Amino acid sequence: MIILIDKMIKNLINLFFPKICLGCKNLLTDNEVNICTKCRNTLPVTDYHNFEGNAMEKIFYGRSEINAATALLRYSKKGIVQELMHNLKYRGHEEIGNLFGSWLGYELSQSERFQNIDIVIPVPLHKSKLKKRGYNQVSKFAQELAKFLNTSCNETILLKSQNTKTQVFKKRFARWQRNNEIFTIKNGHLLANKNVLIADDIVTTGATLEKCCEIIKPFKPASISIACIAITD
Image (tube, rainbow, N blue to C red; front, side, top):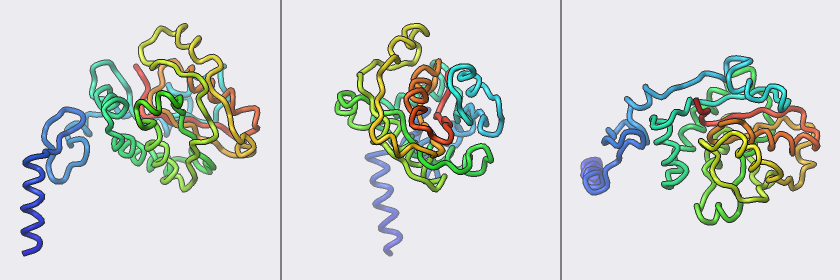
């Protein structure tokens, strides 16, 4: 009887508040969460975490000394990843960060290239943008990475001191200019001799992440690695 009542309540909730796929907007089945099976199977997964010298790492050649870098997905304009990232960044769907964080977190936990991470640091938002949006879209992603890597996520060490506009699809030189002197470090001694993993949502030219590496390096971490949800084509 109780099971029947629970099922009726669930059916009523689905009737008035249907769960839809955050990728294609079709209705989800009872066994699907956040995105439908079709969308999940068509996501452009990179598998970069398994390959040294991948396209993500090549972005930082000659610019930042990193141990390893990866991105879970490839981002293309008007593609499914763009829709999912817009839902994450601008429409309040933080659960997408959880989804991709647990997905990539598990993959990294199985990869020899991302073992012994001591601390995960998400790329921060400026306090004014954080207040307006209500959340940092990278936070849940970074927290899930830390959980699967059996380490801590710290959002108080790397801070953004200047407010900047979104980086995606801006001209390369303009992005480089905007990322000059926009981050600060608090309690940098916590980074000494630590294997640091910087987490971000989308990497384009790598200017933002390069600046993060640059400001962290003087505090003598043992290594710096990078993990992002997506890399632009």
